[in-house]
Length: 575
Image (tube, rainbow, N blue to C red; front, side, top):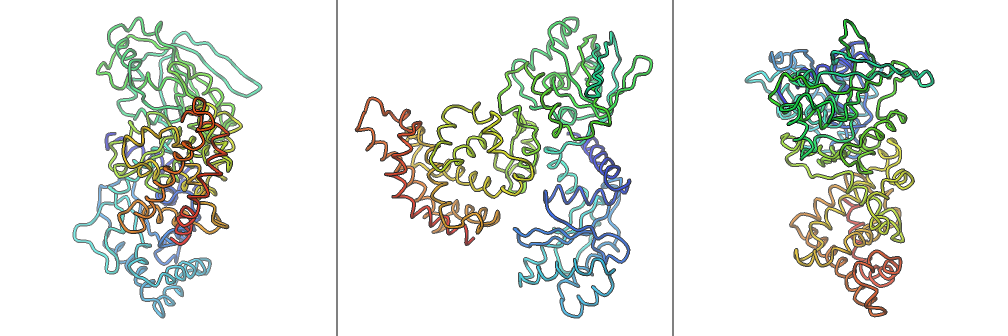
């Protein structure tokens, strides 16, 4: 993505947020965006105003170390064009000094700020002081700005790594935009052969007309494709269909209208003047592969026409597209050109966007849309990230959803069943519940990851025992979480810390990996014992996808491995 397009898009995001939430105040909108992009859905206090002591926000992070972030921000609408003023460094130094010196220095600092924020600052001070470790406390202080770094500038008490300048802010925006791409710019299309359909019941007006494919190609020269198709259920899938679309556009433009199913676009407003329509906040919900094909073409002009359907939502349908159930049903209905899987239809749900943001905080790229990883894999921010798809997460959560192993059987029946409404809503509830229960989701993922990496001695053994993989995940999860009041005693941070240790080279890591291997071995040994009753019937495939097999695993294998797995659970609680 070109740097100029990225900057322009970033400023559009801040401007749009300012108009929606802060009466046009760009500085406040920038700070609001930064907190969301860096920390996700967290509680925070906006303190910026007269006599704020040089602090613009306090972010509460009870599951992290440090548990507080103290933020000063400086915003300019020309990112990277000028250096941050020397006074900004001195002002932030005084804030850090007040918290570091404690005692009289902090009391003098508190006395200088306005009354409504004194309590907030004291609470932040107390939480940081409880760490009793300045090397940890100093990580709480952040200076964030769209100005560039001033050569030779320094801070007295903290390293400049605590500061995020224009370059770091734009890199953060690259990361942020993957799950929350801002509105696309208005799209102008020449209208030919227009038909209009009014739906008074829903207060929606729709149009069908022929548009020039070349106008989409021209639009995409200055606008990223992902921004226009962000509400689609998939990104670029590549392959034969994309190559065919591109070839027709370039070599047989007069056939394009006949061979192409057309585009479907949702927008907030549609105005037409002299046969040129302007679509406000356009979002292509069907035709993403067409746009990717057009954007990759070197042919800027073409006589190709494309049938275009435009659904105008209007201001009365103010809820976001991902929260508009009716529109999500429309998206499901129009996506049939490539084979659409059940998990594709779930990719834009509010709960999936929340999961993507939460996993990002744990350095996991959650690929909720097919093709998303290919779109963004070269972004430097994601090079150290693990990768997890919506499809695999559905299998993981289904596997651990039932104590008796019925979730394993659901996975064995096929992926389509997992994403049917009833089971899906149990595995992926509302956005709010997903947020509250994320530590459970993350625990299941880390157990899966550890089993996948360390569950088998050799690749040959892994292939041989592949039928028992999901059963092993179920038993491991059940044993680890069997400690009394497990979920009330663990935190997201303790789960992450423990599994980082388990995957390490220390004594605790070797012990944990040994328990994982013993569990896999115990399940396979149980099959050998149980199959004696009917060797022809109880093949590995049949045994590990049966209720009979699950009962045998619970009575023969689980008691042997439970003590060791419980010890891992206690380790997680103590991390």
